Length: 171
Image (cartoon, rainbow, N blue to C red):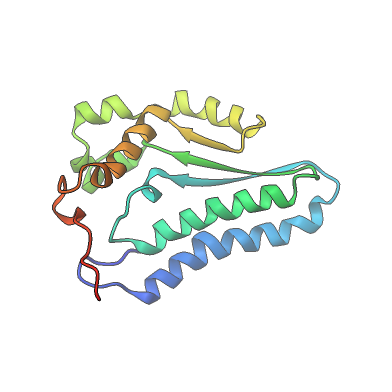
């Protein structure tokens, strides 16, 4: 579920946080007693959607940012153990999200073809990441870099977007 364009919904925000953040923490809490002395890797899946300051779907974006940060802290906390906490920040991967609907209209076919990666290419790289010493993977990197640059554009070039002007300071 998501907020609509006119109103923020605390109920929807709490529901999304309960699933995307508290649900993950509940799973980790339940799994930890069974993993003492064993090797395990927890992987949080995030997305480039947490890069953009999106005024809608606030719960999703905040939950994914918080999840990535929590995994970083947990990885530090359990650094002397056999437990690893990794974060996978995904850009566009060719899945059904791009077939029809809003996402398809946002990405014209030429742009989509330039920045998406097929699942046949993505899956082996993601599996290698899980078994590697790396803690964070931005994948596919060219697409994630484009999203990062696009997110920074309003800060670098004020006025490029009509809503990017800084709010006036109150005295």
